[in-house]
Image (cartoon, rainbow, N blue to C red; front, side, top):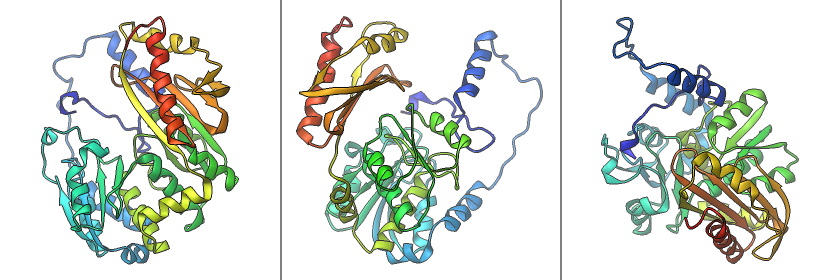
Length: 366
């Protein structure tokens, strides 16, 4: 939201500031009041980052496969910082681009610039009306990606991360360690098991993935709320690269997006993902993690709890590869619930039971 404003810190290596770095900054902020004036005149240097960045994107992807996928395409950048950058690249590869919300607008047109289904009505209509064969959307700072397939159906990170991983493995023949946040789909686990790839699960927030990226030979890292990051390009999420790789996969396989999604489900089995946000109960935020850890159910939605992990909040691993995660948001006064199961009805039941557990606990109604 525009009222959040603030700063996003990037470190010298081009990725998100790691926890150790942000903790040092927070410590300094708590030690003394900041001066109203700087100690020196400072310097502002203007650089052309756009040209170098576009060149890096061109060098990473296969131009022939992108041209093979060329079609009328809708692109909603949600008044974000990337503007027409991706649209210009797509036009180079032969796409007929219909750019939506490409103008600068500090209020983002009254919509939170997060590419979730509820915010992409205009893009969805563009595809369903036949004016575009496919839709892509990025967020305010260009590190998230969503898609609208040929049938007008929404695909978010839980669908796109596995598709991009599978493309890297099968078409580009790349290998390496995979990083995912604890709130991300188990489809990643299934793919890694099939191809015998090492998988590391980290706390939510790409700063945690970034630390793992710097410590190991990582092919791709992803989480439930953004585009994946590919360290060979940047140790950070990149919605533009993810969009180009998705289109590269379409051109390489000569399959429509909805078919690629169904092929993955046929090969690895279906999974249904659900997520819900609840207002933070009227307790000190610092007390919530300890309380969540005290919840110890034996069964959830009729499924036996087989293991519990506390990478971030509390995650119960259940029979049939189902799971439920409860964690306090790190950015908003919310409790976040996530669940996944091989059946949609089970995922729905787990989400309801997770909320019920919170409401019936000593925290009281949420």
